[in-house]
Amino acid sequence: MSSVNERALIGESIHDDSGAEVLTQVFVVMGPPKPQGRPRACRRGEYAGVYEDNKDKGDKNNIRAQIVTQRPKRIPMGTPVALAMVYYMPRPKMHYSRSGQVKPRFIDVPHVARPDCDNMEKKFKDALSGMVWHDDSQVVSVYHRKCYCEPDKFPRTEITVLSW
Image 1 (tube, rainbow, N blue to C red):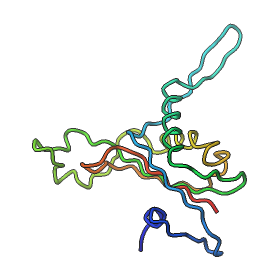
Image 2: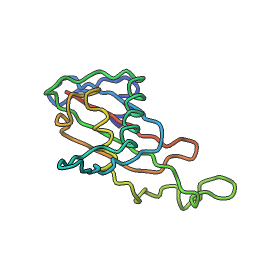
Image 3: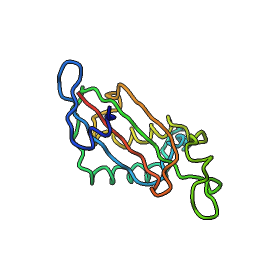
């Protein structure tokens, strides 16, 4: 049986249990996945404030720019959304032999180092809010997986958005 991602990529329509069609959108964001940074606090006189780091703003703008080129369909407010996110992380140099091939013992090694999946998820959900869906609150289900990218591929994030 093929996965939802594979069925969506070839244009096969997917239906839920009631027979209603599920809108499936698949996006690919190139570049190493980065986690959402912590909010920064500052004090201006008597007032305290919180702001977002410029690096995070730049990363989110990069994500939005890449998604726009893939022509997303905006999901209306009140429509439930499910996400499947796969983060392909760059491999460390120790995974490669001198000839440039991945050493056999590292081929299927899971990525268990930082960054955490939930911090990366937050950055992508924030970047896609207002562009693919109206608000983060529409996301009712999330599946994410972290793995090393294949030797001949680049680090990236593949996002499948299902709405019904």
